[in-house]
Image (cartoon, rainbow, N blue to C red; front, side, top):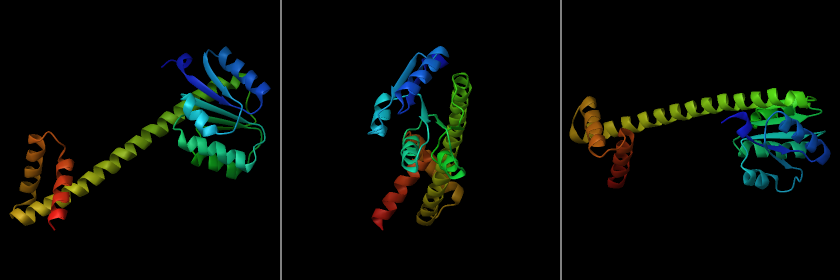
Length: 195
């Protein structure tokens, strides 16, 4: 996807400022920019827009406004760049915990939009890859535990070695075009039902 294809959602409760930022995005070559200035039912509005990236501009946000924006960031897995005029360490840490990719204090100027947008997307993609790798690692560990338990059941019930138990699981998986871990899970369920 080229930068000009990105669907950018701009959230700003100040219509005049939002119009200037939108103009900056259009000048930077981003043709698909949607602006939200009404903050009621914000999460629903964001989901309906289905943006590729979200820019949030907050002048002097209070705690409730920040929490609502963090709620959006946590629930919509998209790159989020948040601009605030004033901040503190706690708000910055809360933004990072909520998955905000770029948290910029007193830095919203037209000429800075593109590099900050690029950075937010890069950070989000890097974090997304790490999260996927972590999920795959967790799944592999869980699969290993299930396979080990299934091997134990087969070794005990059939009086076979660990290697023979694994060979039997693997052969069954190949014959049924399933994963070894799925066959092992089926065996555990059956063993539980049979007591």
